[in-house]
Image (cartoon, rainbow, N blue to C red; front, side):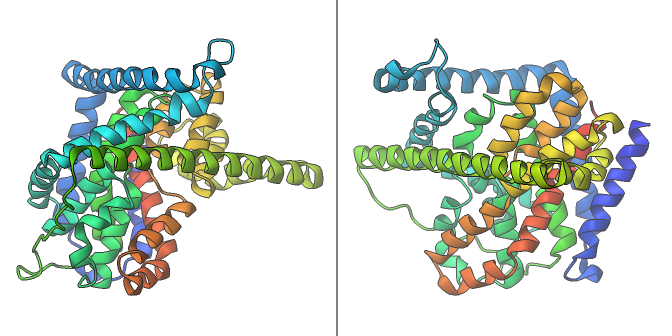
Length: 393
């Protein structure tokens, strides 16, 4: 039965992508097949083998150590705010972003991170059927963040065609920033966070091949990165500390606003129609939950959480999942966890458009024009990754 649902999930996902394809005749099926096989192998390795378990546990433990180190600074400043021995969500899950951001800054400063990103990007370009710039951008977005990644390619941004620009933006929305991975691990199982990071990278390439097919010539396939500005070590530390704090506060503000707004809308719908707004969305998204392999008895509740992620953000949806995880089967929790680990939501359109506007206002207008298509494609990326994991659990 799992195999049949898996085939159904792939068929529906690819069909939904095919519907909005900009050039169906130019779709390259060979790299799509190669990438799909790689995904199946990697997901099986990470979720169903002892070596994969050791690898995932090692990564999760490493983040656990980093989070413990971050607690020393948080406790020093906010120790008195702990409530009954349990720190509030802002302190335990969001403020560690500052320390992770500092580590990213250090790796950037000593040119270690750019070397790793370029190396992985180069290897990916050999199998994904896309250009070096697209491959680099996908890896970089998963590490430095969806807004910051455009700074490193700002010299090429104005020269990019509409299709190549779409691919760069789609990669930024389909992945997540390494600086907040630790925060995710506070809400969902680390093994699913790690698996989603890997799968979304390849799912993003597959969906782009269908939604936005094109060919990059050898003359165009040049990767010219912006030189990092020269700073002293302590200047860099100060900048990344502020950047990490800004991200943490921004996420906190969005959570306050979105959670309150959803509560208000739910209350309004419940008083007028006798059903919450999220419940209505749950019914709308339930077919998508089913094709990922979620049991029929849980698809409405799962659809509710999936829709919440789309209209708010992944943090709100993860909190909802954490609250009801005990009522759901482990299979449903696993598939939903994979689906939630991405930036595919309405607010990301504004973030990406804002990031490009600060560099090239003309290209930012182009990004705004295909904003909804970006969100549509990124949601299909999450759907594809969830479907892949559904056949493995």
